[in-house]
Figure (cartoon, rainbow, N blue to C red):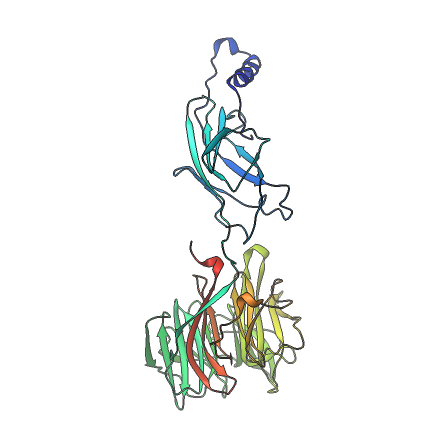
Length: 444
């Protein structure tokens, strides 16, 4: 029931009407409810043509007496007046009175047809049907005070990884970053939380390991010796063991959402042909369909899309090298369907090169960091990877961000984007570490 201001005479008339409808009304007394709490609250405005207000959910904090929208309204959003809808506990608990207090201090009795100067509203006071019990709520309409989609970057360390470096890749495992650095016959690992780090020699990894193949799962880390197709496994990031596999593995794509035949999607050679396989730990594999022509099998970037709301669960793969050693300038969507891996080629402008690109999932959408002739740019997809849009100026990299390709880009639970190293346009291995975050995720 929408809360209204009722005069005592109106409440008396309403109760007489209710009284007359009861068969035993002559022997019962009607007790007015002492419940002054607001149970539902919403706003609307005729000038809000995009229905932002009507779709905004408000939190009613009964303990602290506050009403506010947890998710701020868009930057620069403005309306002068609104219509309030306020509801009590039930149809029979009409408020005796509702008062609104506006800035500067002015209080008046509210009627539900009144337009309210929402930017001045600071308090709502309700009086229960008993005419005595009162409840006050401080009101706050939260609006982004700066552009929430500005992406701010900070260089965390100019020399994060030790030299010399021939190749590198960073993965996240057990809430820590593991940066693998290949130099000569040794592979070192730098374990870090982004601030404090330690460097160790790996144990059990051959120098022929393809650093770009390193992949993390929920339970282990995996890497691939590209010369032999041998898989290596680690549970701590330092100590590695060879896995005996039923087929020769040619690529590890990563954990596949909605996997039926094993958590990990990979490519393996079976009877001279390359097939997609699914596996939990590479000791057993479920062979699926053949991989499509021009599918990359090394040096690619991959990210998982897992949006339960839209039932969107699959892998996206960009760049890389094909089995014929050709460069792949495509973005692939891979998803399991009835025992096979279906693929879709994303629509991306012909002028865009995804060779050496880096995929990551952020703000509920896939992002792609590409390298142009002059600088790095971000692209993102609003339709889950089918089409790609170049990010606007508010998401540019800073001027001192060295142009690079083959960087490791990882997002964390605090909505930060971490960029680890990469290869400069002069083929120099970069050792720096950057961190960025959208303004919308900064705490107020």
